[in-house]
Length: 65
Image (cartoon, rainbow, N blue to C red):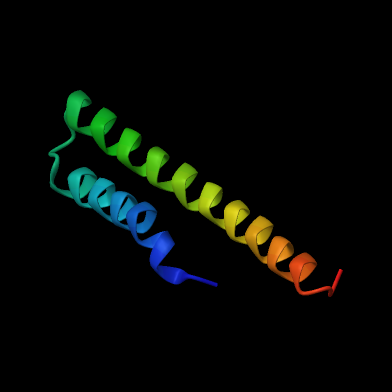
């Protein structure tokens, strides 16, 4: 598994949490934080599915299906 592929998703979630913590409770900052956390979460899940598919392809090519 290539863990470096998960870095952008994790970074977006962490930045979103930082914006939420430092935002002061404004509607705009809360919305920006939710978008960052949401996009980071979707990116991380998509990366996980990609890694699963890529490992299945590698196993199939190696004849371990």
